[in-house]
Amino acid sequence: MRTPVNGLDVPAQVLVTGASSGIGLAMVEALLGNAAVARVCAVSRHAVASPGLHALARVHGARLHCIDADLTTDAGIDAVATGARSVTDALHLLVNCAGVLHGDALHPEKSLATLDRAALQQVFALNAFAPVLLVQALLPLLDARSRWVVASLSARVGSIGDNTLGGWYAYRASKAAQNQFLRTLAIELRRTHPLATCVLLHPGTVDTPLSRPFQSRVPAGALFTPARAAGQLLDIIAGLQPRDSGRFIAWDGSDIAW
Image (cartoon, rainbow, N blue to C red; front, top):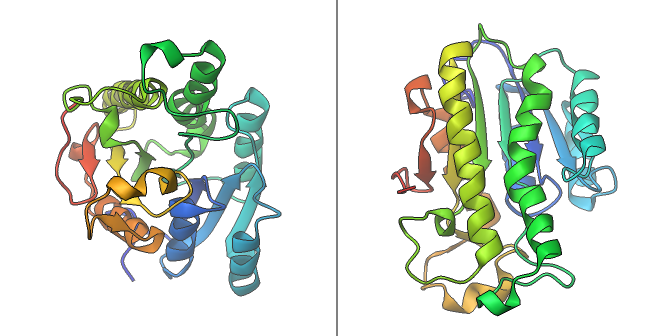
C-alpha cells in the first residue's frame, strides 16, 4: 500500500492528536488500515478509555498505542513525548487534529461585547500553542536525515485575507496564530531538517461535534463524513514533498490565502 509519507522507505511511525473522535479517530482508523504504517500513537485526553480506540485496539493490537494527555498543559505535552518514546525511537508523521470551537460555557463570539479573557486563553492554548509546542517536544524523534511530515488541522476561517464576515474572534485568531507558528517553523526546518514537510490543512466542514451546531448553514453536498475528510487529507499528505513545506492547503488541494 502507499506509504503515508512520500519517499519514506521504512514502515511509518505515526502520531495523531484529537484521536478519540471525529476526524482524528477516522485518521487513526485509516492509517491502521494501511500496511505501510507500523504503529499509530493515538493521543487525546481520554484515549485509553475511548470506545472507538478500544475497538480499533481489538483489531490491530500493539500497532495502536493510546496516550492520555491534555495538550493545553506542559505535563500533557511531556506525556505525549514520553508515551511516544516508550514505543518508538523515530516518528515519520505527526497529524494534529485536536482543536476547540465551543464547549461548556464556551461559545463562538458574535460581537466584541462577548469577548472574555479566560475563553480566549482556553481556545488559544489548544488551537494555537499546542501544535507548535508538541513539535518542540517531539523533535528528538524527528530525524534530520529522514523524510517526515507535520500536518496540523487549521480552518479557512483562520485566513485573515478570507475574513469577510467577522465574528468567532477566538477561533479565527487562534487558527491564524497556529498558521503563523507553523509557517515560521517550516522556514526554520528548511535549514535544520531539509527533508521535512510542515503544512496546515483545512478539512472542509465535517460532520463532527465541533461543527454540529452550525451545519444548517452548510450547502448541500459540502458536509463531509469524518472518514471522507480523513481520506482526503491523508491523500494530500501522502503526496507532499519538502518543497510544499509552509503551505496552507484546503481539502481539495488548493492553497488558501493567509
